[in-house]
Length: 344
Image 1: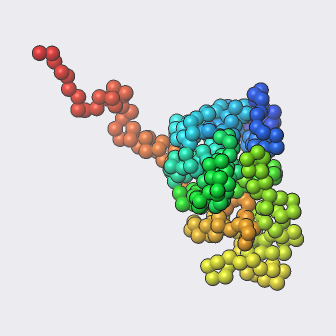
Image 2: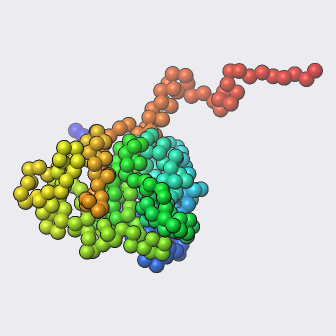
Image 3: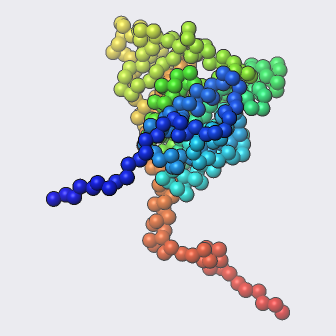
């Protein structure tokens, strides 16, 4: 007869308030970061993870103040280096839920090289990339995601740089979970954050975020009240790609190219969302869709499985110990090729 286990400790119930610090939150009034912070605090309270197991890691930028505003463990690192610190934390203690908060400048310019290797290694952590198409903290210079021709203090006659697509960047690094959400939809943000946390492997979430001072209304053409029905495509696994006020428009393939069709007359041709596709071709199609020709996809774009870097590290270490023994620090430092110099 099986023995019933009755002494398993229950995790304390958490609320958003458990993740609110006593620090004054100092962003510009109306900044999209406030909504993201609120949504993340509410999400953490619902994940069933002990509060002491959360770690926030950031670099430099407005978004990088998150470790000060989340009542968890945290590291405010140097510009662009949050991915390396986060990797070390996760490898040292795989039980931790590690979250990197970064911006389009911190994560894709100064830290682009570090971000690429974090994604390709498939470390089991979560990356939230705030994309406001500008450098906010340093007062409005153009960023890697600024549209061609953007006029700023550092590009007074218009930027000549071709903008970087964050989702294509993540796809190029073969990230196993890629998603997008927006700062003015708390419900969708929370759903996306929960999906990212549940994924075993790297999760990369781009968040359209508004900088009210240096790039106000950057995303209004997509998620503004008058535009969002026709300019946003919410993705649901196993469901057709439909959009419009009454979901009367759909996306189908014409050869290798997407096209918009009347969903009421050609429902059989509408593409079905399949984020688990191993080939990146479907995800690339979604990542390149956007204004003005197509609606912008929102939700989980790619979700596949691959062994995680941190798990492989520990498996490799265990195998080495089983074969050669645990070893000592003395042996590690001195090795087998040492010699002693005797005074003459």
